[in-house]
Length: 285
Image (cartoon, rainbow, N blue to C red; front, side):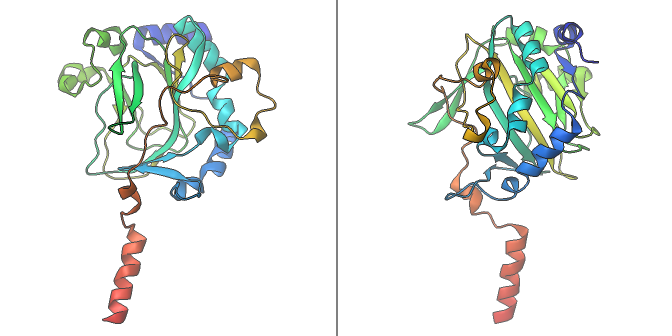
């Protein structure tokens, strides 16, 4: 049984808590069924789908795919946990459903997320500013079984990461290596919530299965609104006042949705395209 008091104690001590079981297998299967097609096609020229960035695919307009998705992000237990921990009303500042593919080239850096993201329109880049006294909750739920490439956290690092006033911590990996906890070989539905001052990353991996996850960041009211949230009118009628608060009803977004993919992502030939081109060349040779 999940309990707010013991969950808060766990986050205070270790920086994270395992909430696996919070979301039912039925809901997870419903979400997967709704996002399967768009996660297989690029979001371009009117076609709804994913935004490509390196070895990752991010579902565009994540919150528009169904009430099931909204209900995960506004889960009663999760919101009570975040507001008790932050001692403030919270809102959803960052969110995404994404897939990570094994890669020889990509390695996520050790980082924390108590920072403000804004978009620099002139230079077309996201800019981060670390806010050491910011306090909120990040949650991540596996939508697929994960063998490798799972989330890694540095146990207890939320107690000291703010002393450095920086976002990246690769330079300290040897110092905190004994405190690394890795969520590999875990089933879909695995649900981790952690203080976003906790140092974390996705474990680098170069083989095996694709990992698909749902991510969210719940920030206290004193922090900026964050990313735009686009909803389907179909899902609006039954949203209660607390859900509307969490989803930033009536508030202006303070940044853009991340990531913004490069047009080059759609120019990269897939293996299927390479095979077709090869066959055509052989045919006309």
